[in-house]
Image 1 (cartoon, rainbow, N blue to C red):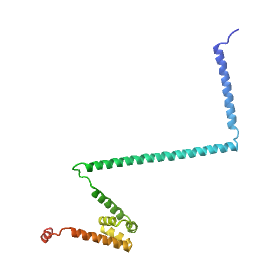
Image 2: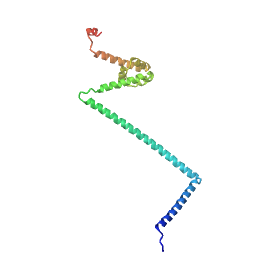
Image 3: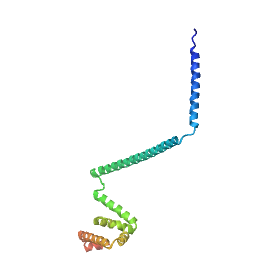
Length: 188
């Protein structure tokens, strides 16, 4: 009996594979062209909505992660800057700003902020501050700005600030050594 050749067997198997693939493609095309049921459409719609919601959540998480990384970078940079300032201040012979100078700079910044605000709005906030803070900020502000803010304050608040400023001025005058008359005349 003659045995079939390997080439003949391979050709027969290839022909069967082609026929099987064609049948599979034909059944898939028939199923996809058939009208979908309402249940099938509903399921597809639910899956699409679920995928969209998952994509929105992922996008939100990505944005939060980016914001967190940016905040962390800013904090690390701020920490490094503060450490550098602390090292510069701790170095012997360094002319760094002391705590008193830093506090003065903070009050200067507050004075600029209150001067930039409308007097009526500034007065509402200004009255809520501690009297010591009010005094330090008012002393650093332009006289016109201070006057406009005090005019918008309640009479009691304005009176309290005026009295505190007057006491501070009186103390400063008492602490300052009196200048001799000759020194006053030479200073002219």
